[in-house]
Length: 211
Image (tube, rainbow, N blue to C red; front, side, top):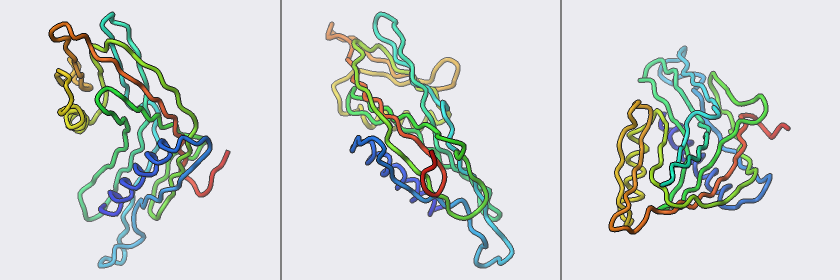
């Protein structure tokens, strides 16, 4: 499991690198170890895992002061263990980078029919940069992130915005399915503007790239 954690860190670095380079059809391969053929001290035991690229698993909704709504569906890469002699764990890769109110949303898109793998051994995740677009949403009143990992997202957003001059509040949505970040128009300073940079990354689990 420690090896998989390191590999997911490398996967994030690879996707961040592709996003920063912004070169169409540039790709990087990252190996993920699903499990081991045999556990060294138990020669007949194997550890297994599964790896899935899942599109549209969480949503980001942005509302401006005129109650106009902009929404994005974003994909996830998920590893789930099936260990014989260790607690079960999952590693989830959901991506949005932000600096004050400059958001980079990385849309992970499963490509072809090779978007899942299970068993043991090592499988490469091929990540390919596809395209990007930029625009600004003015006077943002709130941002809602619908996700199963609310605490992780809340800690992440707090860390990123804690040193900004923005007045904000993060709380759970009424339905309990996500978090909402509320911004406040204090002393008539206006709501903040949100600069969006949408990057599309295609993901495939295979050796080599298959079109």
